[in-house]
Length: 297
Picture (tube, rainbow, N blue to C red):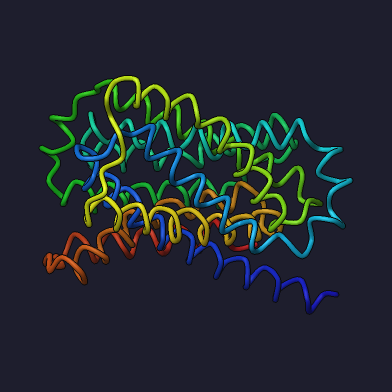
């Protein structure tokens, strides 16, 4: 058992890295199609397709897990509301109004809220090493998104999109802590159950867009964006995250969030031909060391 535990944690860390890599492209893609695609319609179609993929994975376990799901129906509805529908709605609406810099900086406050909720709900306190690691990671993320130009930070202005980002951060921190609290639920089944419920929760948003004459455009760009947001930053990322959080805990899992701008930057370098600068390397180093400090037992 002592040998198995480090192995489980190592696999959980790998799953978190994969999830952060997929989420690194999430806001890049969402922002790229933000002006073309109505936000609430995007949430609905992304969640519906997400639920269909999750069903394929959960199907062999549904009959066995049905009594557990029925007994936890209330918490499944809460997870669907805050972790799937609420978080995505806040994020996809926010990218229409805020800048990538604001969004990245505010999103990296997730560990602070996760630590607070972990203490309030689970009684788990944050260690001094985790505080140092989280602070170092946050500084690294600031270096990356500000391009080491402090004038960028000096001219930051809050807007309605930033408030939506913060609401989404609170939703995600709470979602992560509740995942840890209900770790006995099978991750594959839980992902399907929450996305299935979230699909119905997203219908009013779809109807709102339709009533205002906005429908999802069937363009190559919009459909390609929906494909990435559904398969990679939703289905695969949520499955990886759902398996990792019960093993390492919500605190450690959310300390990986500064890796999102790291992977987003690397994706821009590889796929968009953007240059890699010294401030990127310095930021990557800070984030990497910070994550190692926060995740180390």
